[in-house]
Image 1 (tube, rainbow, N blue to C red):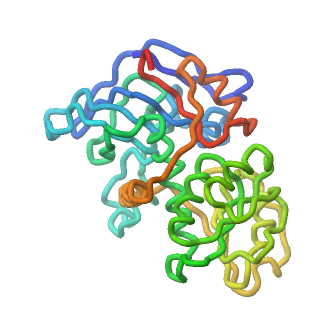
Image 2 (image 1 turned 120 degrees about the vertical axis):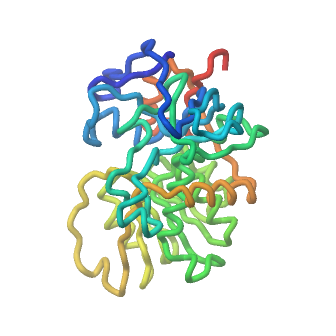
Length: 340
């Protein structure tokens, strides 16, 4: 199979991913083999490639927003999977036995494996995954528009749940989004469908202003600008620690700030007044399979739209540079299937 391989992390400007022909993956008990159509490009991939996440394997195939068709299954897997379109997300497998798995918190599993990081991912023609960790996907929708749902969408969905607005009531709630890439443009649509007002703060206002307004944002401003009203909650999707004090400063009393990334630059110190009046900071770590299925169901119900920019597998170096430079409006997807 053809794959984009990372031997050692490096700046994306040095193009550390190399296209190679590798042996096809070998199935283990419980696995399916998926022929990849497309794989979304996520900021987590950027962190893996550039080494901001610890390099855990001597050779890695990144990519964890995978859409493809099941080409083979291990003997102990139901043959009904064959030929089905499926999605593979960041959470590759959990132990099922630790205290977190035993209490419906598998996203915190102590022995979890992650697609495109601790196991090979989707920047390849074939990928294997446990059948119990893949998601059935509809054949009617374009693969390119499904791929961003499998990480940007799922993590955006979990971040929305961490805002606490479900308990307070979404109707009329004021939600801020810091950073407006793949996750932000999905989270905005979900929040709007639930009845919230959404205020978008992005450092690239000109590029994203039209898209944010088109998707229903009540206001769009610079990343460090103050929204016109106090916020009930906010989510920081940008990996920029300096936005944490900014987001806290925009919250109303009792507001919650959610940090939605897997990596963030250093958070500067801030005075106690920023969190006084019961303001909170929460983080998001991975996702559960229930998160993924609930999000996909809600996305289908509200007719969620993804905005994508397409690249071929041979263009993955260009795509990573564009992602790093915030030059992608919406989400990037890598077309892996030949003649796509």
